[in-house]
Length: 61
Image (cartoon, rainbow, N blue to C red; front, side, top):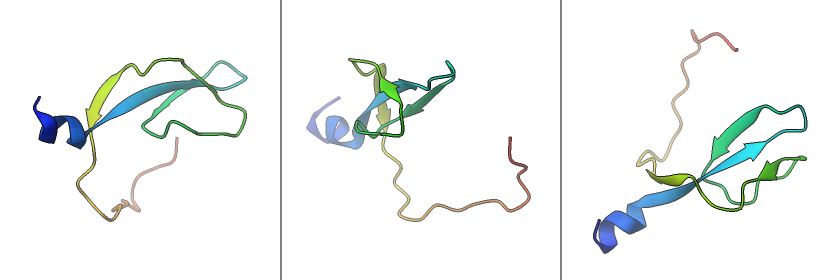
């Protein structure tokens, strides 16, 4: 991608919790006892939405 594409894409990091479960985030500095992989897995498109729309009918997992 060109410069515009690179600016629109963010590095995706893999984090591991103490219990071994994994989560993925574009934030390079998540805390809370999470261990981040040294290198990002890939780059992902940034969310163009400024507000997060939640579905109240969605069940928590």
